[in-house]
Amino acid sequence: MKSSSSKNQALEQVKQSIIKDKVCPDLAASATQLVFGDGDPNSSIVFIGEAPGKAEDATGIPFVGAAGKFLNEMLETIGLERSAVYITNIVKYRPPNNRDPLPEEKKAFLPYLQRQLEIIQPKIVVALGRHAASCFLPQLKISLDHGHAKRITLAFSGQPLTLVLLPLFHPAAALYNGSMRQTLIDDFSLIPDIISQVKDPRISFKQVTI
Ligand code: URA
Image (cartoon, rainbow, N blue to C red; front, side, top):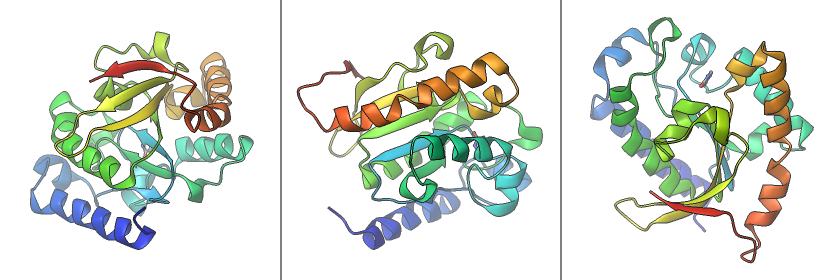
């Protein structure tokens, strides 16, 4: 396994390449800074959101605003320290006025997200909301597929990466919606079981190759 410091170095190179490659220059110009990722690059679990909001744009750290506080609370309820997981977004600059990321913005950032995952080699990806989840499963309907873990194989340029994808509602969408909030909390409580099952090759998840 690569050490945290060599993974951090490789991740820093990906971050610098986003700047060098001038990905989404209009978004870059309207944002304060690039919000790349936070947490432990040796974690077996990666959480992926949509795009930075105001607080993330100001701090350079994903999920530090209201949605982030809710995410931290849910992590705590399942006994996971935020510092023990890795957190990032598909789109890495704040869209103006927090509008939804555009399809071309998600597409432009996808290779960099893939590089992040190739370096981290997670066993589980928790996709927070439909924008993150549909990067992996384009046909996905978050209202139907949330809470259903699937084993997927990502066919990157290098070695294919097989992992378990858990699509969930986005914490910001669920924050002030009572029933969605409870559904998200219930779905979140599946994570510890998935973590233990994923280590057991006899347990199969629905297999999808994309
Ligand atoms: N919502 C997201 O999708 N990502 C963040 O980093 C913050 C809010």
